[in-house]
Length: 111
Image 1: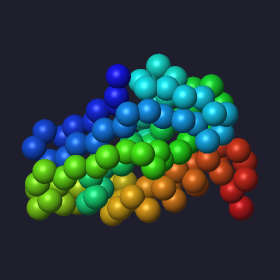
Image 2 (image 1 turned 90 degrees about the vertical axis):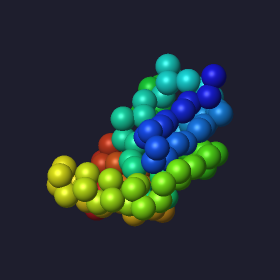
Image 3 (image 1 turned 120 degrees about the horizontal axis):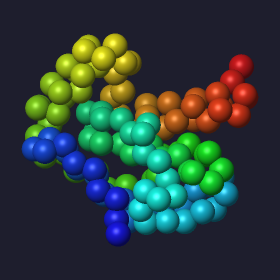
Image 4 (image 1 turned 135 degrees about the vertical axis):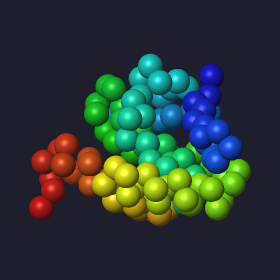
C-alpha cells in the first residue's frame, strides 16, 4: 500500500515504496518508517521519513507531489509559519537541507 498525504483542496503527495539510505530497509507503509518531520511548502507536502530500524532521516526522491490550489496553499503555508513560529520552508530543497541537519544533530556531527 502506498503512503498518501493530503491537505484537502490544497495538496497531495504519494510514495509507492521507501528505501532507507542508511540501512537499506524497504517498505510500503508506516510500520517501518515515521513521517513526523513532514513539511508543507509552496511546492506541496514534502514527506520527511525516519527509519524505525536505524534512525536515518531522509527525504525520499520518489515522492510524487501535487498542488491543487497554489494560491491557497501559499497562504496556508505562510499563515502556519506565522502562527507556529516555525521557519518558513519554501521548497523541496529547503526541506532536504533541514532533514540533513536533523541527521547531523542525531549523529552528533553538527559543527
